[in-house]
Length: 322
Image 1 (tube, rainbow, N blue to C red):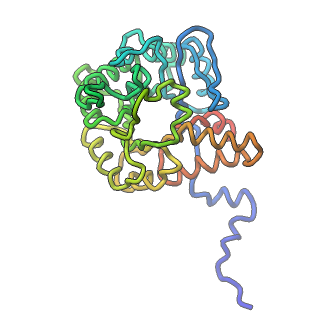
Image 2 (image 1 turned 45 degrees about the horizontal axis):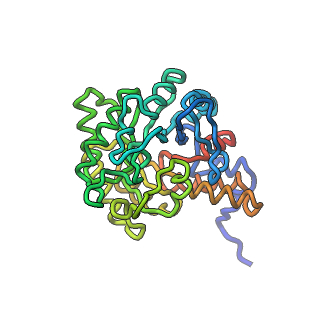
Image 3 (image 1 turned 90 degrees about the vertical axis):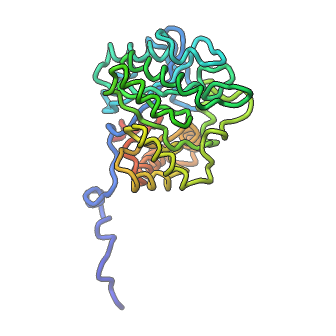
């Protein structure tokens, strides 16, 4: 009987050996925790389709930020639910808007945490689309100025980074120019460079009350069938001044994360979206999956694919495990 000269199992015999040769690791500092901010006071409402995730009023944010810091999660991304919506999303850039107040509250109480803001109009428009509608179509170029005003208002409130998620052509360049012209050249842009028109966003649309009232977003978000197009999208955002490139969703697009990692030197982010979180939570609640293990495995797969940064609703839970 011939014995193998090399036995890979030698390095799997116990946890110390496995840890010694582990190729991919997770750290709390590479995780970004999303927060949903709602009007009112002393509000903390659990989102039914996302167990463990809450809508919070502004006065509840500091405690959440402090907990994240204690766990080593040093970055948050904010999504707002405004008091009122209109056709042009004017609440997105209002000086006293929900996100502007949220930024100030967090930076006043927990100044050392990094505050990232989602820049989009879908949460603020009465029709639920990510831009200005003219003649029943989302008008790309008319939307750019509103997005830039929104990003500027976030920077003025104290945001460290803005993250345009609308998928309008040219929005990174418009935002970069506006920030620079107003002396916010140090505010970074994390672009949702490759955002697919995915079915995995369902619970988020419940959480942020931003489902389109008619039609869908396939006219501006990417076709899930396309991979090479992702490189064209990311290249444009790099040329326009993006500091970080994001892929969204994550788990169904690990190949796209790897493509960006191999093609660009920019930091790569990936968003483990609401549907990914919800389906793991639901299966675990029914006893079909081990929640801690599938959480860790899913995040490791995103990291292994090439993501330097992971936006995830599991951030606090994973940090506790780490």
